[in-house]
Length: 176
Image (cartoon, rainbow, N blue to C red; front, side, top):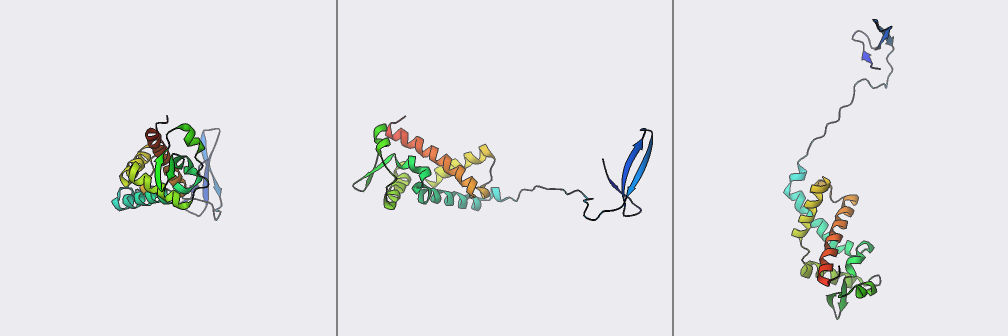
């Protein structure tokens, strides 16, 4: 049923018909708080998605966040298990058995830092690689650069980086 605002008074007019032949109108008094004008939602592009500074800052933030924060968390434990520290140097595990026996839950923070540096220097997990991974995420999921640093979006980025690093470390270890 459609409502029409009367042009003469502040009443709402409801069109009705009897026997579908003669149209009649029914007058209803105006009720305050009743939405008369429909709300129109407009979506616009702010342009932040194309801004190179937003892209640079989001890329840099996520890269540092993964190497300095997430690498120490349980979510990235499978990545740390590929690396063993012996005499202050990092070595990649050589077998599935060695991978399974590597207990990283008792690892110190300095051990995590050494592994983080190893990922950056030896594995080649650079800001450029991070940018390529983010661009894949944006293309596939339709996300925007300025929203990538949110909690849910960051978890998506962490998951993608984890898969990338796991694949790279498996190739280096010879474990398929």
